[in-house]
Image (cartoon, rainbow over all chains, first blue to last red; front, top):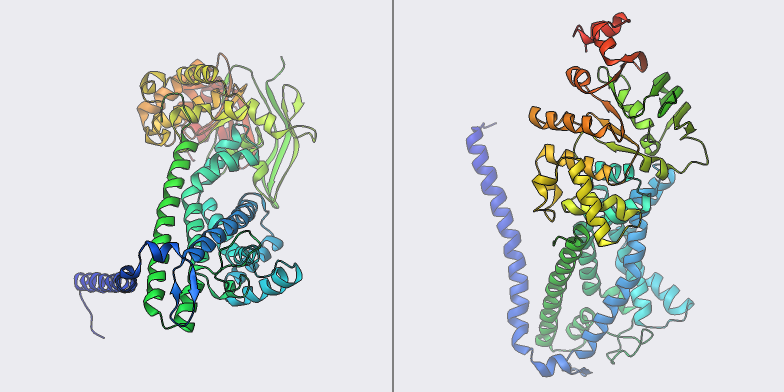
Length: 287
Length: 251
């Protein structure tokens, strides 16, 4: 075996990791760049603010899809965030370390590995058929909440567990109850991690298509309530690519998706920073 | 005379391992009591039993009584939160919250439902003054407590405890992470505080015990070997083991 000097090994390692890092960034730029270059020229106000008209040429725009996507995100998060944070708080702060909680954690991990279309079939059977929600935003949001719940629980729990126990002890030694410790010390400190988890869930909701196709249906009409069906942007991309020859519009829809995801990312980060400073401070001396 | 706090045949177990055996000890009000002994002798475990901080460690149990003003704090009807308000604690590593100096001190009072801004301001100032930190931070109360020096952080933690107006303050090696000057300031502070509070301090530093305390208890292998006036312990120890320890023959 050839022996390299430590200095050379260091250089090789640096070069290798640098190259891999560059490849990863390059691939990302290539995909995003390709979609944006292909898609952006097609986008205009008419495309954004008119609804799909169907047909082989994929006539019309994407307005109802944008609306359906936003409805879906809001509804999903309204169901998912309280559930996910509640479960994470229980697991991180209250649950004793025993067989039952190990089993719960194991199940959560297992759930995270199940393909989304399986969740889709579950949602179709339970929410669409058994509960008579039909193809609807509500059925889609409930299904998505089930799909994303394990991930959110896991990431929020990790974020809370990363808060040093000396912080909890400090609060408890001051006479804080468990709940006060959680709300006034643990959650503020874990907020950046929790927010990242939520951002990734929103991204997952926007990107998901298969399990929504079987729970929200593919109707391109404008949703009027939680019980109307709808077609999200991701499903619309799928539809345009498979059922029409309007590949340019599929790319344009993809470009809109990317822009929305970036926007959500920025907004969530801003909200998190705002919340954090408010929870930290709240003083009469400024800050 | 009635003791402020008292333990009677206190035993504590981590699982099956006995960490403390039959500790009977009385703590005088408005005095400083030091607990000394080598690492692992049970002095920190003992201290944490005095405000039930060991409750959260699973797989532990205790026998015997801990009395605060004659009342057993481990009695079933006692509210643990109430106990911790009356018996505050300062930890080995300064652990301010990642909040402003003001919010750190106001944490306890706010938790107890005090939201009146003028009253909070008053409590914050009074506590910071009592902890000898006010003059250094009064213009920067919005600054994060994490940005203070180690010694200032520990005084902030003391101010945070004082704001809850406890009767007893437990200090778990409060100076072990601090430089000699900061240590001196904390010791001065302890002497000021004992007029209003009863202080129990765990320390590795025998000079510190000799300097600040009226009473000293020597722990070894989970037992209270000797407990007496500090002067007696350091000048005329009755037990051979105490003498060996304070003369530096082991530990």
